[in-house]
Image 1 (cartoon, rainbow, N blue to C red):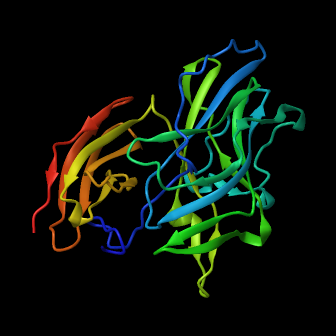
Image 2 (cartoon, one colour):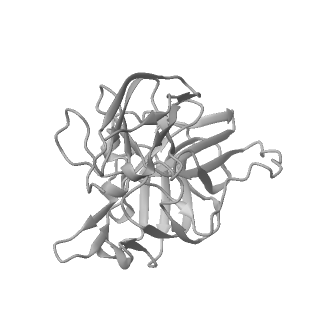
Length: 301
């Protein structure tokens, strides 16, 4: 299998991205009853979904999830770039010009434990945290991690350490990036970028430098399809003219799915190995809240 992904016109090696899933195959459960939301509260649900990476396993020890609510309801949150979305809380940057009385950290319900980041992909997801919080504008998500973080590569297990023992990951969120099931019922998906988040040092150790993207289901779209044969070890790159790129590793049966795509035209590039030829499908239209299925792709040598 090739060690790197490549996309026409980029000329650089790119590795795939990934997110979380609960160890023990925790699945999203929509069957639970939804009690009435108190008048002064709003409901929040945070899901985890995976774009894959070239590790056997990646484990993250998640202990607590909180959201920062601006109860004054401010919305001046668009003056930052996505590359500044995530950081360690200990490296906190004071970029909020609001009174402290407006800021409330609310804890969400969660099953604390060690989460495997890699099994969830191709449209699968899991509920990480949820609950009722103060009404207002949610600006931050804070994830507290423990010290049982590790990865498995080629059958070998390596510990993954945070920088200088830091333990709280901050994810910045714009007020308009949430899916609204109703006025007071919001949801969001977190996408953990393994390529940027796990750094291998010169002496072979692995360091966690978190980089997390967000996406929604109702406001964004997806592309799905099937690529065969399996022994071509296909890697899927979905990209547009704005240099936005997402990735997928198909299941052994060949099915793949990439979610969190902005509305517009996208291209599907299949990076093949083992003597098979690469192929590209251009001009795939993505619509809001819909899945676009491309025709089955059969690779040839």
